[in-house]
Image (cartoon, rainbow, N blue to C red; front, side, top):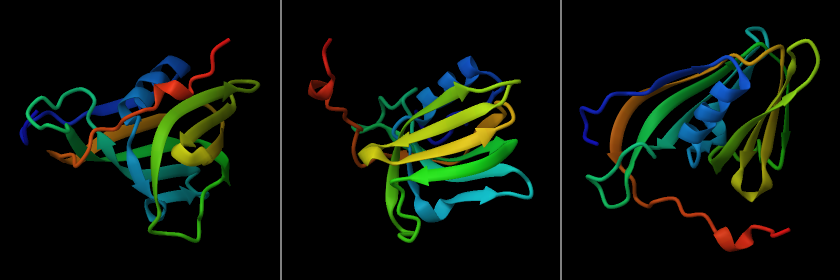
Amino acid sequence: MNSSAAHLRLIAHDEEDLKILSAHLQDAVVKVSEIAFLPQSRRFAMVVNRYCWEGGEDAPNGFRMRTGVHFDGVLKVRAQGVRQDAREAVMELLAIAYAPGTDGAGAIELSFAGGGMIRLEVECIEAAMADLAGPWPATARPRHRLDRVERA
């Protein structure tokens, strides 16, 4: 990957699409101050530094890109384990999942390292992400502790 690499632009309208969005946003980092719920627009948005899992052979730790993410049709937002008063705190996004409700409605759950979660009550799945700038060399490659997986 180099500075002329194509920027990703993805949309999600169903659960399978959302899984693809989640995979591309895994290990993105975001400051609390760069997360917003706009109730009158029914939009939840954030600007993250996305880890580029799709490439990175040109840099020892891979690359990151500045990426905008938004969810539309959001009726309600609940946060758990997110220090909203710590505006400069940085959170690491682990996954995005969907919990279906009735009549196409449901909840989109954003899970963060350390146990934080943001739950979006939505009318339907309507999400998008778009790379805004980058890439730049990452200072570290994300690592996951596999020894913490519980065995049946």
